[in-house]
Length: 305
Image: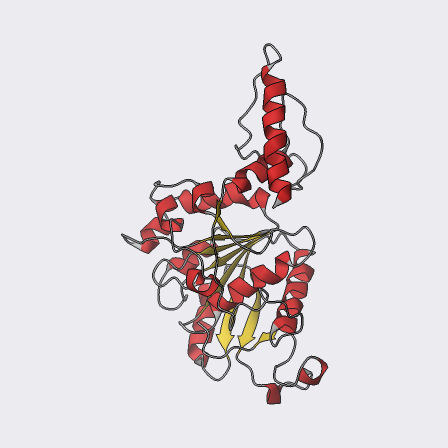
């Protein structure tokens, strides 16, 4: 994270220079400001009176909490040293297809959901964020918005809070709920401690505000939501996102439940469906990757929630 540390040093220098000039007021370096270049973060040298978006972003991210993560090696595929472990190529393919969709439409805030529990949405959310930051200079944030049954902190081996619940109750700000672990440019907001009605928390307006504050800081924001058929939270969260990615589990998700989940987002931008748990025998392309896994863009898991 040397770039962030360098940004902190430059921030102090810029503020000192600005304060030495009479009649010039400067904004705090940690304040998030809207980009003036279509959301693109630049690395231009700061003027004394106008700190750049790049600096304020790096300083804000430096305020996030550095925590010790202990990822589950069976499910978090990209934390190890292997480059061709089972499942990794499918996530690279999924990443490529999302970037192809992004060429045709704005797509930076992505909701990942499923019809029912245990379909693999949390597994998909976490590994998709990991494969994104494998690309040079790409920064991703994964948010556990399943306030009823959070799973992501367990998969990542991260701290369970403070998190989204604390922010939605106005008990914490956005920087204090963000964590950064051992993988550079990967940030995480856990669900936190729920002490009320999750649907009411999601709908109180602060979720939309949070995403508007964070969007300029990240290339992608991946939001893991509760199952869409059982509760209303996913539909509410989809209102704040650019697209929805549905996860269904092969030979597990009932057809009626999958159809109902699709209807829940009839008015939303469903960018695709991840078929999870497909067997290698059903894929004629598995030989091009490894014999134990399925076709590109189909994510195979075993007992992964």
